[in-house]
Image 1 (spheres, rainbow, N blue to C red):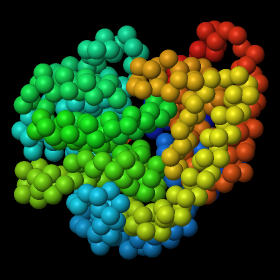
Image 2 (image 1 turned 90 degrees about the vertical axis):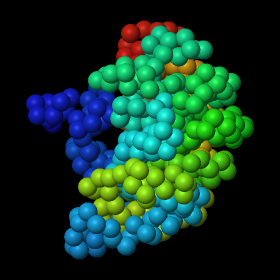
Image 3 (image 1 turned 180 degrees about the vertical axis):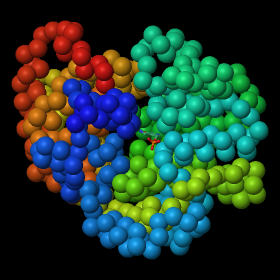
Image 4 (image 1 turned 120 degrees about the horizontal axis):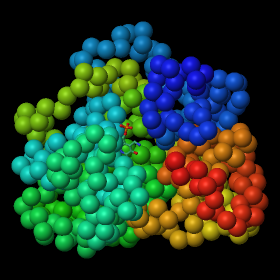
Length: 438
Ligand code: PMP
């Protein structure tokens, strides 16, 4: 199938992030915690479509909402009542009063950047090194690069992604995560020029890197002192790590929040929340936040079901139990096999990183063995567990259908992996490093 697909679809995949070694995985269907490939092999799914499917596959509430809506018309480019319920529920959870919708995380962070520029009348944006915030020009800067390509640690380059002019990258300034002094210096150097800062309050594309105590509060204070705005990219964290994302978990409310992924329960829904001041720029027409499919009726029906029926307080309590069980046992399993390991668990996310030292920023994370993580992906796959192919960067995502028994299969495979890698003295071999693709 991969060979046939490759003739008409570049790389044989609809998105380059769906690629994996040795071959992309073609999925036939899913149910609850499971997915089946086109050869009818069943896997426990901890990939969850890059963290989007915390409701589980074919969740009955989402299926019912979509089935009902699909018979009533799926596109008008006019508002439907479900969107009010969704906006009100997001306000309640995240503490920002006004919400607009879009179709992806990229669109949400693009709107955030535009809004920050429109409101302040300034051009420069600050983003965090190594943080993935979508694939539009202003944020696809200094991501997935080696340390050499990122420049000196104390004066990081702004390295544009392929196809992005340096002139656009030059409207961006890069700071390391968890470094408040670097941010302060940058804001002083560019007094009156910075529109705002956009970043993930927990860095999710590098295992999981948590903010140090007081970091988020300090960022908010500093950015505001310099007349700039603060946007949290909660595309990956929002609704997954906690009912109200990192915003509610840490109690630091920014000016703008970007959501997507888990929000639509498997349908393409993004959202952007803002203070009355920020969203006033949309209301009075200074910024046209637009999109033919924004607030699409099918998406809104699914999202309403996700927020009001599926991702309840009980669902988070269960996810925390299952997640804590997996993390605790994964750490002891790898330690038994004399492997360095640390990890985190928040709600539906579990991150297990093959290193003793928790990373503070992206450059620390580059030191973590890619090979071990890729081998884990392959051994888990052969043992009936589907992880996100970009093994080093990604974490495990649970769904409401996952139980500790599903975790036990993951843990058994991890023990096998431990046995194999504890005997590997040389991890620099080409075969082992082949995983650096991820
Ligand atoms: N922000 C973050 C933090 C993400 O992880 C992603 C996707 N991995 C995006 C933005 C972009 O979302 P999308 O792929 O829906 O455009």
